[in-house]
Length: 175
Image (cartoon, rainbow, N blue to C red; front, side):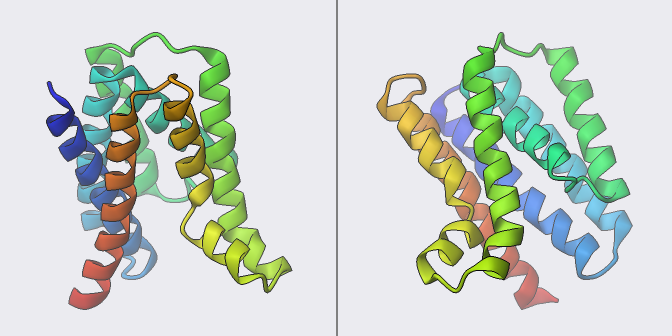
């Protein structure tokens, strides 16, 4: 698998993740939220099992969301189960706990900041920074600059984030 296929898995997982959330949160549509969640779980697991760098990112997102209590619907639980089962079957790469912890803390910072910052400050920069969850983007970029990750994984992660936003736009347009 090349970085092109990995990039496709990242962008699909970002799109499916956001679309699943919006289907559930806005439309209360558990059935289709679960379908898109399963697709998200499959694409995340495929990327995770292929690339150790993707594994850091997707496990960090998963654990950060669990700690932030964002796994709050049946569609999330089903997505989590699909992700874990496929990852275990295909084989999870060996992870460095320090790098994983750094990624988890960045994902948790994004989730907590996204919920809280706008409630405690009117600072436009901080509000935009956390609205678009830039903590993990900065951390992944720094890990790439320091040589821990390949710079192409940062590009893949940006595609994940861009298609997460695109899914929100598509959802709003067609709902």
